[in-house]
Image (cartoon, rainbow over all chains, first blue to last red; front, top):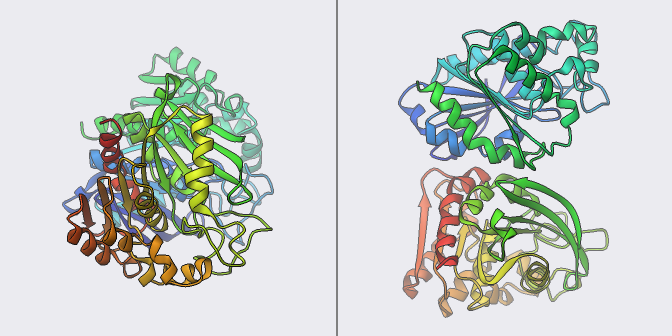
Length: 275
Length: 275
């Protein structure tokens, strides 16, 4: 693992590191915020999965999450959204290929060799974090934005017992029925139907999420039609799931929306992580 | 004036606008955060002047200031740091020309026609803001980072009675004695000596700043030698000025440093603005 930078931030340290991932077969970069309390022992970890076109950097610099993580003594990890580099397949579209990994393991050419973001997050990055930093693997929570909200919901649904709480900002909720999903599942997995195992609405229709859930989505989200929030809302209500879905008046899809509600999301996770 | 974007943010609106400046002879872009209270009447205004290489966007997206401005019912304006465009003089160095206006009015070729950032801030942008938005011109405060900290200190010193409080993050304190200043004053004004009228330390040696002052600078600032904090510290103490200078252990020059202390700076200004 290579240290790229470390900056003191809210009494703790905002670091950026690079490491080799066996799953993606590439170097991967991630941001990690450690609160001051990490000097004295292991702290809980909140994962933040980012959206389309983002790297590890966007949420790390624009979401304002460190202020609240420091207040609650939590660490934050900001993974990249895909493998990158010259030897890695890509597409001209902003929503396929590099920057658009969708947090799944691709099975189809040309994506299969490197696009294995589910394994990267749950195995490689996880192993690196818990072996090299003072983090408590028994206290993990997960959140994310847009494609990263989809990632948070689906990785939590596929990993029972792993995350104590789950939240999302404007998540893609039902990608097998959306243009943010059908094309990608076809490319990465061979068909939209193969994406049902990685679709939050489909997963929650079949199984309970074994953790409390908080979702915020703006009523003026410019991508609202692509998110299919209504499908997940229906599924959660039908399932009588422990969940809070808030449609926030006037907010859109931007980081101005995310930063506005970050304090409440971090507090929500802190309650579960410190319980 | 043209609206470029408006995003709901912490209950208020983060806008970006473009307007023509008579002083610079160019279109200029600025960010303006209006808190929810602006719907009901004029609110106080805190100016944030940015540092070298920045546009209106950096602090607007990375300083986390809107959270605290919303809490205190303050507006925030984020001006650009220089005129820009093809017809505007520039230099290959990052610290001269476009992105490096130093908040002064240039008198020398090729800079004089457009590099008039002092007049732009104090006149053109100010006129536009107070005529087009619900802002209280009797309640203004000013802050900034690095070159923008120099701007905040010097514009306040040169405008007695205008700003009720002044603060700065890692300001350039004594540019006539620094490589962040000598080159620029020579280019824009003809000599480093001509810069004494625009040097915070020189100004404060001669006159009181008629407003309370708060400065934070990191002990690990990678540009610490260029800031000349010691000169301003000496001048403030010799003058028995109302001022707080904090050297913050372990912090550097980055936005991670700025965002850490933004809450306290906004609260400091709010106290003066609402008095």
